[in-house]
Image (cartoon, rainbow, N blue to C red; front, side):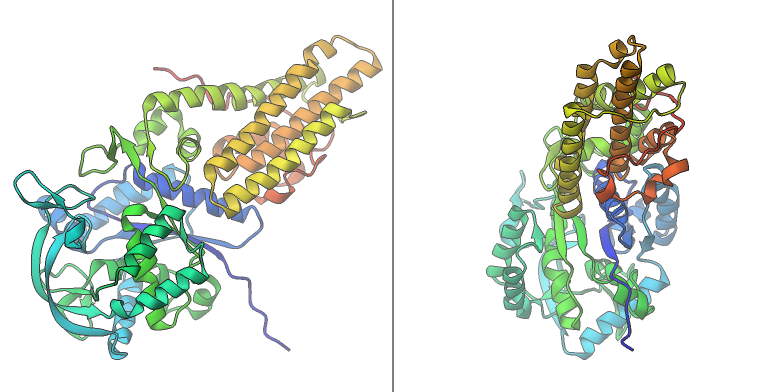
Length: 527
């Protein structure tokens, strides 16, 4: 009898984040996007696996710890437990694992991976002199540096002077993988997204790759090179391998085969080359499968500058959630900014969109539908009878909405497009209620009048049910409130178990379901 294997998990990763400081909006932007994507696929009925974590080695972390008067391990432990993990919990991030690069399950596997490359002749010893940015933890190509005011050369990302490093290192034969990478990009045109990112990567590789330094010998905060403990493994080699070690590489073969490689690596565009060039080359050297997609999101801009701690524009997510709420926070950045492009953040824009779309459109819809069922039918959902052209038209819009949102978010990672599609349907439902005027129909106490009122309110409640399902990956808190107010869980089961593709199936809420009007989904903002 042939052996059967469980289907591969839909595996999404964020970058692992440096713990040189607390997380800011840029980190949360990527992490929320990954959470929405995996929740969406989970509601498709797929087995999913979502990985995030922290990058804890390297010179930048070591220097930050020294500046704070503690050892690097103590600094990492403090930041992870007091800042990073609590924030992801606060933002309703449903990650399946949190990998720390100082954990033994990671460091031991990193040494095995690098030792294997060394034994295969893929790594050799040499010397190197060149400009290095500690902020990026990366040697820079001289041609990409900027000119500073005093003649110094600046990192194009951090706008700070680079350091000229000269040391004996071990090198990975990256230069030999240029043709193989170009062949792979050609065969897999969707591997790097968006198109602008793909063009950047392809052009960089076409100009020729240099062998990559994979060790450092001027400091000791890192994973020891197994055959030469005077060196530590370059932090980016260490970091990239988290995507394999967390998935069971070298420790849990069944899990590894079920999970690896990632279907989607979500990255910031400043670390694109590591993920789209170095990481696949490392996997090629080991004969391991390559990821499905590397998707580079843009930068969040404040005053025209990339948001980061180093340029003092880092804003804490809690500053916004305290005012707007967690669900609105999760919604806003994905709705306001096309994923893959840079986007400007402003408090004023958030306030306007919150009031217009969340409070007035969505929140008001949920409030008035549940209130009318309570007022006219004592909170018992009436059944629909005698549906007409208006109801049929709304159902057709819903079917189109479900298909379009599923394609945009689940397949294309067009979060903005998918969210706008759902909110377009919300506007349709509001328009339907305005046109049908149930408050006027309620004045007709005849059998025909009651039947018509029942149809209008059932149609509105069913529409709300579908909206709750579609928005659950984006705004799980408010969606759960809508689900509970419709009495849906008693009859249909938990919201998280509802299938995205079935959201448009009509008539799922049963007649007689208990409908209650709860607190407003999105309260009026107080300045």
